[in-house]
Image (tube, rainbow, N blue to C red; front, side, top):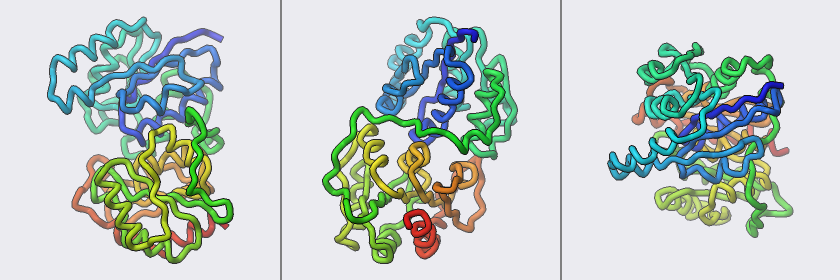
Amino acid sequence: MVFMKIAIVKLSALGDIVHAMVVLQFIKKFNKEISIDWIVDESYKDLLEFHPDINKVHFLNLKQAKNEKSIPILIKELKKIRKLTPYDIVVDMQGLLKSAVVSRIIPSKVTIGFDKASLRERVASTLYNKKFKYSYSKNIIERNFELIKFALEMPIQKEDIKHKLPFLYAHKQDEIAILSNTKKNVILIPGASHIAKRYSPENFSKLTKLLDVNYLVIWGDDKEKIIAEQIKKLSPEVNICNKMTLSSLISVFCQVDLVIGPDTGPTHIAWALNVPSITLFGPTPGHRNAYITKINKIIESNSKVDPYRINKKDYSIRDIDVQEILHKARGLLF
């Protein structure tokens, strides 16, 4: 086997990083001698830092630079990666202008990414010296897989994704007092990056009255906590979890029987851990943003969806019938 040092650039967000991390096990299966570094925004540190297939994680504070509109912070962060030891290959798995700039600055022999016809921000492709064509509208997990396969010339097939091993790791297993020993444990995720992607508290409440299981509602910020409390007010029997770190979230997911939520990072964590899940889609494309398996199901609204742009006025996720979720949940739980 030939030793090779590669860097993967996937800066954000939670679900996108999870969808990219699946490639790690296939790289190591292909060649254990390949050394893999990962460049990511510091806010996702817990997700990657203890992964056994990653040699080193390099953190950037690009979000801080953006929030503070600080050019000095941005320059400081980019200087950090310019000083990295050269790589044989840098692969931009994000395909945005910001990730392409980061990829280009990293010292390397080859910088690889999607060609302009395969990107939403097409200008990013001008910064790669080796390009790969794969339609932007195709499944995101398959896109990541095919890009890495192309970059490393791996003789594996995308059908292998169906047989993936769980690939997220908690620092420790958290003890959760509200987990039940007598009932199935189901996580409900009411939050998402914007309102149009969220399933309503009223519909979640209807579901809790139809399926006799132990419900745990998770939240990530104050706005999501308010939504969780709305569900609790309508259905007093549900349990609201305390705010969790990414590591704690992974630990809890490993101990439950089903996860139900919208197209958001925590829901995709269930797929990564081979935990049964139902992902609800409104203004985003289900067949692109999720990988359907025997235990990971999706339900899409009837609206037309543009994979290049989210229609934030599309609230069709609210029209998904609770009975349809109930049917799939029963099939996965019992």
